[in-house]
Image (cartoon, rainbow, N blue to C red):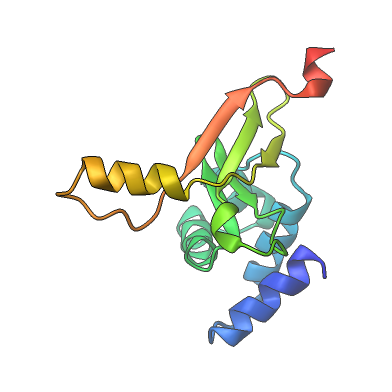
Length: 137
């Protein structure tokens, strides 16, 4: 299944309408090879930035996209067996390519919660930066 088809089925199953603006936003995110910010997305799709942020917010809530320091990107590993791992990214500082990393971090989260008993961790996000293999050459 392609990302766009997956996203469309998730939207419909959660009761969201699949509007032309949402479709164009999905296509733009799906074809982008680096993070895209809301302003560039709005310009590309032909919508205002408030609408772009609203659409992005829905997609974030549904786990269809990721927010990085440089913008937003489609979840490339949407078919993984453990969706909780799809929020770790490696971002190349040279070409800005993003790669999703699957890390087993349950023990880390447990230790963090144990060391900080006054907080309840509901979610987390890891973003690693460096150079990808292509940029190292």
